[in-house]
Amino acid sequence: MLDQTNSSQSSATRNKTTPLPKLAGLALRPVPLFVVQPVLNRLVRDISSRRPELFERLGPHINTVFAIDVEELPFVLALLPDPQEPRLTAHRRSENIASGASISGPFMTLFAIMDGDEDSDALFFARDVEVGGNTEAAVCLRNALDDLEGSVVDDILEIGGALYTPLKIMLAHLRKSEAAP
Amino acid sequence: MSASQTAKSNRPELICPAGTPAALRAAVDAGADAVYCGLQNATNARNFPGLNFTPEALTQSIAYAHERSTKVLLAVNSFATAPETELWHDAVDIAARENADAVIVADIGVARYAADKHPDLRLHLSVQAGASSPEAIKYYCREFGIARVVLPRILTVTEISAIHDEIPCEIEAFVFGNIGMMAEGRCSLTNYITGKSTNMDGVCSPASAVQYVKNADQSLAANLGGFEIDCFAQGESAGYPTICKGRYLTPARSGTYYAFEEPISLNLSSLLPELVAAGVTALKIEGRQRSRSYVKAVVSSYRAAIDAIMEGLEPDLSTLISLTEGGKETQGAFKSKKWR
Image 1 (cartoon, rainbow over the protein chains, first blue to last red):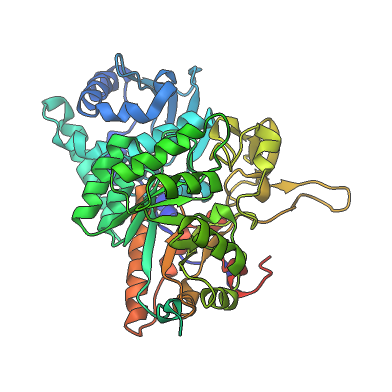
Image 2: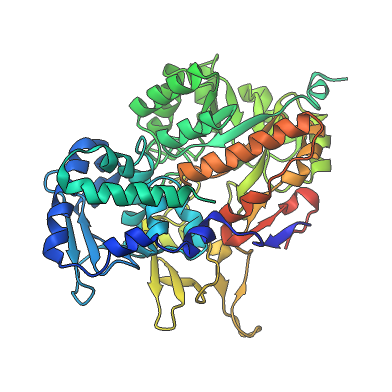
């Protein structure tokens, strides 16, 4: 009978052990939040207007605040996916964010999920990502992102504006790193 | 030789899951012969939050699939409960109206309605019906015109072959994905704690009743309906938060143990040639709750494997272990009756 444990390096494991590319690491060094926040404000508004379908799968959880804790970032993100007034804000870890659900993991892992390139269940099984608080809200957000044609990363790469230029360079670089064997 | 015997060794269909239109497109593009999906309500056994199809999304998805010669099967495979049976009837009507290639049913009331109201609509018998004997399967074929049975995961390949020779319909068998307690359609464990039914509400361990709590020692507790059903040590692989795969304490043992079964996934890649030889018409991948990335990876691998087998080559499915529950895989009851 076949009954074996994982012996080969999974894509999940690969992401877990993939270090953040140097360029991205430099960009994510501790920065003042007032520098990051305008980009986040614009980003959440632009994505919301381009992707109204994103909210359909969230149901009542358009009113849930999601804390997104990316290990390598010097701050935690709080997302309120309200189609009327979406918010994405950066907070220092010392702040107590009133969130309904939380999702945490390494940058490259969460990036791969957002880019539709990894299976979040497998990453959860491998303990690469963790979910806290309202599990239903987290599942809805996962399903909403997963049903997008293309991905949010595609959107960011397509949106114009000087404000996004550094972000675009970084995302293109991350995708190249993601695709590398 | 019966008509069903001539089906042996024909090229099997690859039946793939889709929880969203994006996953359906991924399955079609990856080489699925048919994709199964459900509506956003209790009429199907994967009634999870944020998952499944609106009637409008189903229309568009069927068009996408049919343009690429892929079939779409609508799962209406939970058990209709009074006084809300109209919901199940509506789902069958939607399938007929939108030209779904088949409806997957489990409930005899739903099967009766579909057979009477839409006699040209092809019916498949869901695994949830738990039909595992020639007599039971022939009953469904005779009464409702069932064209295909999805066999419960309690039979060996030898038993499947024997059943094949006695029944007048096609056989579909699971080959990959989640594997639960083997009395499908009869499990009420989730009701016990959450009040929600796998069989009637279409949801096992509803996400609204699940909570993960990280402890000071970095272990992760999985709670269902306020009860801790497992606790994973730091770095230990996790599984779905279902009662059947939880670990429990008992005075008779030291430490926790899996009282029912372990987090593990079915993977019958090495049995594919035997299944084909046994007359299985369709090979089914589980996982409507999984992402489009999972669908793409598993469907692509199984597509290549089936094509390889049909050409007499050795299939390679070694990359799928990363997508299994708990990082473990099993052949379940297909090789022998015992799989623990």
